[in-house]
Length: 356
Image 1: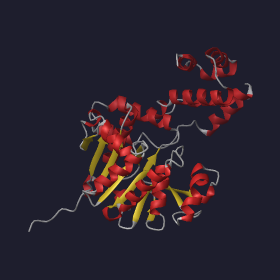
Image 2 (image 1 turned 30 degrees about the horizontal axis):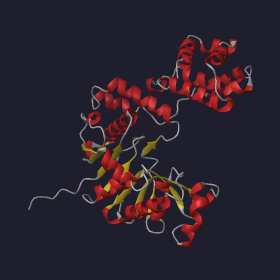
Image 3 (image 1 turned 45 degrees about the vertical axis):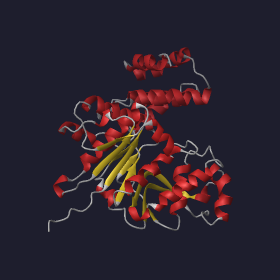
Image 4 (image 1 turned 60 degrees about the vertical axis):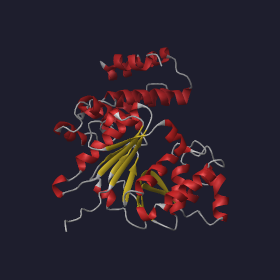
């Protein structure tokens, strides 16, 4: 009898909407392929469920086109868009014994096979294990849902929260997804403003039933400081979009690292001293502008400059309300800041005062 090949693990993405999400997904996929150890025989299947097939045409993956009607059905009955994550993973597990669904705003630090090494019967793989449910009694999830769930014996203050940027399960535990879907449908009307209801329901469904494992060492999930990491990825795509799997493109994957670009400590101290001459409400604004202007040796860190400048203005607006372009110009013309920005001042001014 011929030797039967073991079933291949399934890495699954769900990518919809603006081009940014497809850019994220493409880079995450390439980072997975770059980290695979082909010499050791590592292999997996990658499936992408999407409303736009074109961005993935050059990648060795399986794509599934999903139209609006199907997506709306997945999000029914309340139109909760994260519900579709569980629907897709449930569908894949009907066909395969092992699957991991991963958000698009991720990239790999290690081989994706490390994820599948942590998926087994009786286990839930998530991106990160969070604090206990009772740690934040002021959250909407606690205020509106705790009494009901405690009364039914579904959750208590000791339940660990999870981040569902990664969801990995074996087929035998797919019922966890059914339970989570049922909870979403029931609880959404009670807490419609709960953005993270999907991952909360996953935590409830797994509580006392599955051992929960995390994988922050394997992937970077950049839900925080997203603009800077998107800027790195977009710079990589501008450089390698014509051939995503070339040797040069794969070599550059490691340069799109998980570090938020910041100048060295001495430079940051210098920026802090410099900004003491500015009005107090403008000091953080100036420091963040200078973070963007620092000449980082890594080309993908340098690409974060506009994201730093945008964040600086966003934070200033949050502190002061609407900031007129003329106020920005006045701040940039402060002698100390003008000198520190040097030739970049014109770039910063043009970027921040353009029509928004």
